[in-house]
Image (cartoon, rainbow, N blue to C red; front, side, top):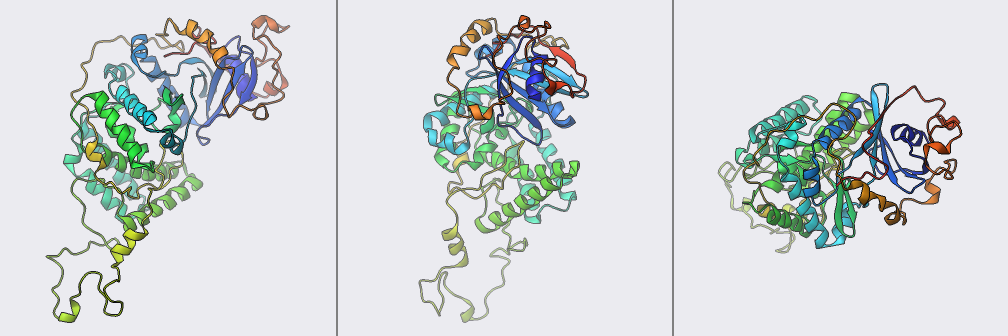
Length: 490
């Protein structure tokens, strides 16, 4: 109810008829889907703290940089901000709702190769965005070496906590010091890409949301979430479609860096918990790091380096090489692999037993903004990243004026209104998560959605329309006049 009341303040004339929760990171945001009297859908996202508020402000800046021409050229739709409401230092955002639904990774894999190929083409389109888009929004820009050095600095900070298993520290440091691994062409990247930020409709990506971490950096970051895919063929299809769409020389190491990013996200999760003194997050991070350390000790982990690191024993100590190993001084000390005098010729070595017991699928890797889960058991195709792609030379930049500092989103698509007037009819069939039991029965649905519908002249469902909002703090209304109830953008 509170988010519905905020939405009426952010978008004049909006009269909520139904309210339902939608998936989001509960540590950072309160979110809801609102259907108004005209059956238009709106997404409300309210930050819980300063850090998440800054992420939404960054997303607004990024979305303003997408000109109408850029939006029209993309094979997917982008969010558009319809209005905002400030409550103290935090600001709640109301977005025009986009088509499609979130599918988990297993559902995407089960959807088949056509969906995987479409995801590859979508990622290619993101990486083909002009770099001036990032420059115009004053968002982060990294060269390949700057990006690698930044990761090394983060690793040093994580090591100082004393909570990272030594084996993982050595493994990550070895990969970050493998200079050949970091020869890539920086591109515009989404930065927070995973299955929950892809809206799927009819087996294709209809929209991409969550543009809070846009930057120029390593394209591999947008593939990190694929480390959790249980079917290597799914990842292979994504990469093949990406390569074909980019039409450039392959980056043979993109999936190695992606696997490293998925593992390192666990350390970043722990560091964030320590910074905020979040005991639950700290405990989760430590447990996931222990699980990852055990998986790598047992199964070797996914390849993240070009030059393989030294082998370690179960205590994390280097295993001597053949040249360093002491020579056998007695014939009884020399035995054939797999042979035991007590068992005969059919016994297995310890390493063979580990391989036989290895699970067929990797553990689910982390998502950037939700509690990650330990990644990294091998899928059985360690060279799959050799088919990965790389980007060529960066796109040439053009001069662009900075947008005005206002809450009005410039560059709205001139065809948005006509396109979205028909969205109500198209959206009559409610998605699976919109059931009557999900909605607040106290929410009025008998209004006509106009400002004249209320006796006091205020829009029905506004902050003054019910006792639920009496306890709300004083707010400053900021609306984006150019966006109407059906102002979805492509």
